Image (cartoon, rainbow, N blue to C red):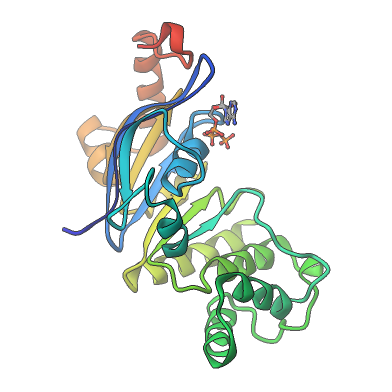
Amino acid sequence: MEIAISCTQLTKKFGSLTAVNQVSMEIPKGSIYGFLGPNGSGKSTTIRMLCGLITPTSGHGTVLGYDIIKDTERIKHRIGYMSQKFSLYEELTVIENLDFYAGIYGIYGETAKKRKTELIEMAGLTGREKQLAGSLSGGWKQRLALACAMLHQPDVLILDEPTAGVDPVSRRIFWDVIHQLANQGITILVSTHYMDEAETCDYIGFIYFGHLLVHGKPSELKKQAGLESLDDLFIQLVNKAQQNGVVNHATNES
Ligand SMILES: Nc1ncnc2c1ncn2[C@@H]1O[C@H](COP(=O)(O)OP(=O)(O)OP(=O)(O)O)[C@@H](O)[C@H]1O
């Protein structure tokens, strides 16, 4: 099994706060890894380290074989990253947003034209090319942002809560696209608060106060715990972690 993303004992401290505490994970190529955890548990910080946007305090990791500390520029060229507050230019049209990002990635001419057509189709935006991004509903904006993040044909997509605040139908459409991309061999790391989304991932990891409490296949994790739902599993894990005194500051961590 080829591994696309891996990290070992990845840790990030902000002053006395340990936001991410010795997180280790491996994500096979072409799989969808759902990253779950309460607000402030360390999902975005882990994601930012894996994208090469911030430097770990300790630990190490690789994305597509590139070191997340030394090879950050290479990683940025090979991944598509969609942050929680994805950046679209609301006063530009759909096609102008794609043109703008194509320019950033250095994609021009026929290659850009072909790629934009493919992505407009993938995002279900055909017919809306000349619509202002600001006038699109949340679900369309989200799919346009995904299209922009994919212009350079990344092998890895890292999506930080892409469906937050999006209606259920748009969430479903978005996840259909995510599954299609994984079927094409793209590796996807996606953070989410939605259990229905987590259920459809190949692997999930649950992080709490910076500690990765569990990771594996959703069905196997439920089976091992003898529980029916991921909600129940996470509640059980949180209760255990609290009993064990897991907290999120460096001076009193477990
Ligand atoms: N640059 C920073 N400086 C100081 N503290 C930070 C910084 N970035 C994150 N934190 C803190 O680190 C902890 C983890 O934050 P992080 O954003 O990674 O959590 P999260 O799981 O992504 O939360 P959410 O679901 O709300 O986005 C939080 O306590 C947060 O306040």
